[in-house]
Image (cartoon, rainbow, N blue to C red):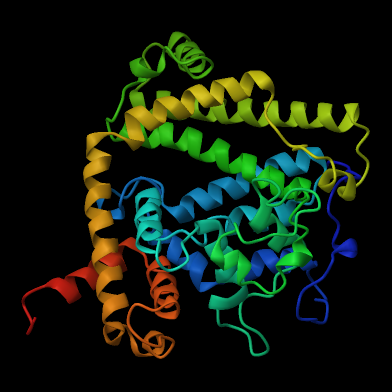
Length: 391
């Protein structure tokens, strides 16, 4: 069992919640955050939201839900070795994709395009909106009333949003600006080490599992990976040791080794940065001025090469482009009909609108569409655009 690091976030030093609640007799505040995220409606919907492949393409491809669980597992593993708070890291890993609309990055791009005249869309800001406003579960407040540490990690998992001394939030996404307690999240500082772990765990998970899904979908082959630094070396070593290994086992054996190597690299590099910079508290991490949790320089270069490969050979593959083109038309059609005819929205959503094509109606429509699963979006499109009126 690892010893708790002095840079770990601790429940006893939590900055609390916006709405004061009595402590749990059985769980820490970060455990409660994790549990609230898992029990949220937004989390359940992730099982039918695209990672890369729309759900109807096959049962074995990652969804937002399975991806989030894989990120959480990696984040806990890294946090355990570094002596960080596993519960906070897990909560952040499980929450990081809650704001994504249906149909993956293509859905996000299309919803952002639709929202250009309605104050924009950003999936990370939508996650904050989801956990502070759109979840309606508790008697005394909207949202999940998560701790400030969890909210801070959601908002800043990729780093500070403002420079030191900068108080101008006008350039931030509208869903951030609308949050009345945003200033409490110290936008000019880095987030906790646990939030940084969750961000790196996200990279590790989708890099490697997109290799797995891409190979299974025949978008590229193992031989195509051989020229990649690090990745090609790992696949080569497995193939050399097990020359008769069937493809599915070759893929799994190689991917698990890639994940292990990347996790070990993060741990070594993070321990080096902590030691060389004499970081001794969670506050030191937040004021450090650069990430504490990071890949080494070599691993960063390897990962950049892998990302470039996946962008060219997977994310821009014509089969994926065709799926995403269909998905974007669905998002565009739904947004147009709802924003121009808000009377077509379900009753509870229609009640939140004021008139067609207003800022308020645009944001309501955005919230409605962002919460959809792939399947629900396709069904809504069919219901609205099918010419079979009596069907």
